[in-house]
Structures are given as C-alpha cells and as structure tokens.
Image 1: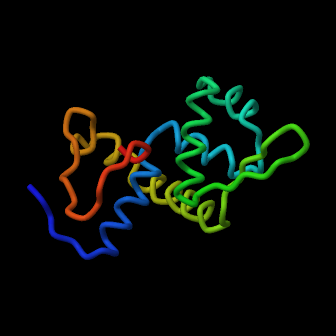
Image 2: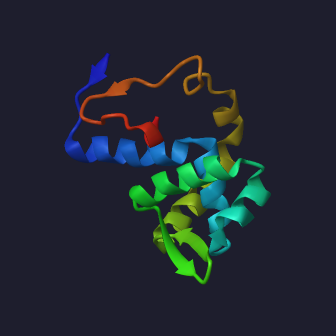
Length: 126
C-alpha cells in the first residue's frame, strides 16, 4: 500500500530513516558529547571499523555529521546543534512513552513500515 504524501513529508520520512538504524543512532548519540575519531567510535560501539566508516559516510552525505582533518586523524561531529536537540527531545518523549514503544509490534523487522511514495530508499537509509 502506497501513501501519497507531499514532498516535505517524504523528505522528513527519509530524514527519520537516517535515525532509524540502531548503529547510526548509537554513533549520533556518542557524537552528542563532542567530536570523535573513527577509532574512538569503534571502541565505544564494538562495531567494526568498516561498519562505523560506512555509517559515518552515510550520516555525512545526509548532512547529519561533518568531518574535519586533525593531523593524521579525521574527527566527526554533529553537523548542527539541532541534531543534538532532536535526540534530546527523543529522550524526553521516550521517558513518557517507553513502555508503549517497547511493546509496539508495528515497527519491527518482521513488520516493515508502509512504503511512502516519493521517498526512494537508498542503501544507507534502508
């Protein structure tokens, strides 16, 4: 079933798919504390270097993080303080509705979300 949406809604859905992957969300949460290298993110998450690099590339391509060369290292950080604000707001909402979200069976691997017309899937957003 396709839901016909406005371009703004489709773009917003695409933004939230960037946050929907648990690995990307873990990286974004870690970057809330400040800039970090890939090595620091690998150590903190337990993900492989390749996996962290791929997710950071996706997040950078989507404009959610930026990178800057610092000597022989590349530091990644949130691109905008509003990304951190959005994550903080999500924490606030979850404090109120965590039980319902945890019990929800609509957004699981076994029950994929509805397709949204105009929101093409890309490899880093699936």
